[in-house]
Amino acid sequence: MPPLYSYLCNSEKCVSDYQLLSMKLLVCISKAPDTTSRIAFTDGDKRFDESGVQFIVNPYDEWYALVRAIELVEAQGGSVTTITVGDATCDPIIRKALAIGASDAVRIDANPTDSSQVARLISNYANDKSYDIIFAGKEAIDYNSSAVPAMIAECMDLPYVALATSIDVDGDVSTLNCESTGGTNNVSVNGAFVLSATKGMSEQRIPNMRGIMSARTKPLTVVEASEVIATTEVSKFTLPPAKGDCVMVEADNAADLVRLLREEAKII
Amino acid sequence: MSVLVYIQTQDGKATKAGLEVASFAKNMNVGDVTALVPGTLSGDGGLGSVGVSKVLHFSEGVTDNAQLSKLTQAAAQSADASTIVFSGNNDGNSIAPRVAIAMNVGYVSGVTRLPEGKTFTRSVFSGKATAAVNVMSDVCVISITPNSYGIKSDTGEASVETFSADIGVQRIVLNGFTPTSSDGSVPLPEAERVVSAGRGLKGPENWGIVEDLARALGATTACSRPVGDMGWRPHHEHVGQTGLTIRPDLYIACGISGAIQHLAGVNQSKVIVVINTDPEAPFFKAADYGIIGDVFEVLPKLTEAIKSL
Image 1 (cartoon, rainbow over the protein chains, first blue to last red):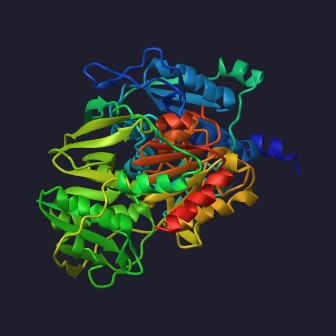
Image 2 (tube, each protein chain N blue to C red):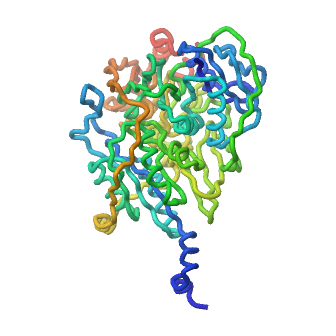
Image 3 (cartoon, each protein chain N blue to C red):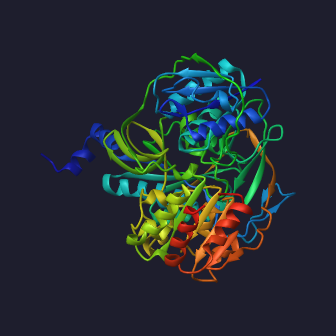
């Protein structure tokens, strides 16, 4: 019997079987302002003011979704493609995802204004590409909607596993732990599905020099956006009122704090 | 015109999150409130007392969010609902966006107060700003941030109807469920009072004083990220960026310096109390009440003072 490698390479049928076995993963990546960014608005308080803001890969997309997808492919073979909806200002964070270990990247050239637009654009792109699993972070740290992955699942009529903290893939069957209300669910899915990832999936990875160098030449395909209409719009952003001074209580006088919480704050 | 609310039950009664969602829907004042209840239900589940006029009961237990989405759409059609309201908990957040896409209508998540017309207020940038969001479709789907509105009693009784619908096939198999809290305390996202501790506690063996205070207050315990990462406390207690975002009425932070990532998860709390030995701890700037002192001395005294109320 010939070695497995040549067997796979010499038979057309077996090559396609091999491709069926190797995973094809899609990871949704969005840019988000660094946690320490000053939050300010422009355009009559209708738009986030991006001037001077340092952008990062949304941490849930990077630390949990992307890194776990890369780990699965490293262990079992296959490819990790990242997908981003945004303009060219997203390219640096996409290159970072490639440096961490994604195989290639797609950017849909659009400036979406709500979650449903993002989800429909990604779904329209992914629909005929037969990805095995679509990963996303549980939420973006800018708009905090936690909506895009569930919406992609609905657009593509796929099962959706929310808040996954672990995933193991065995052939067509994926088994996951995920946070549910008041506990953890263990679930199985057969075939393609969408997941949102949260803490526990994997550890943060710092790209090494080789990764950074190779990211420069990995394919980043920019595709034109399909026409999708938003169903909501932000009419105004508002910053919260400045917090009043902290009322200090002496360490020896815990009873005084309890009195303030009861009589002043009326909270206990 | 009516409002449809998606309600979860425990032992046949609407959960706290469910009662809050129903109260919110009633006080939107746009029409009768119809509740969709999948799973077990006894009587009206306590929903009449928060203003629900009709309960649609789907008796099968369903866990697949695609099926629950189909069920909600069928109920919305039956009730002729113009607004569909979910709790913004883990389950609501996985069903509501599906419903909005399937019905091709606008979705606003994390709503924190009653709307003005079809303009909803939600928190954005991890609590550092709020956004007023207009829904442009006739029908809208929203989710409410748990513990942001509260439960408002109403008088009345809800009629209960058995509801059935074609919800398609189950594609996600639930193999098992492990509850996070075994002591019966309220889950963190719904908790009205939270006592949270950080590295200032010096080690997991010292958590007794935190738990004592939490017990005296009827509070749920939480922790900072380093504490979760070092395995002093379970990960599900971690609040902050990359952990849970909570909005309790009272948040007591013990031995937590208040890094910006931690604040992102708790800054929407109504009252924040900070206890720290370091007067320069950044958390004091975000606090309503502060004590500069050693948690090992302050917490037992605080617990005693609460107990003697």
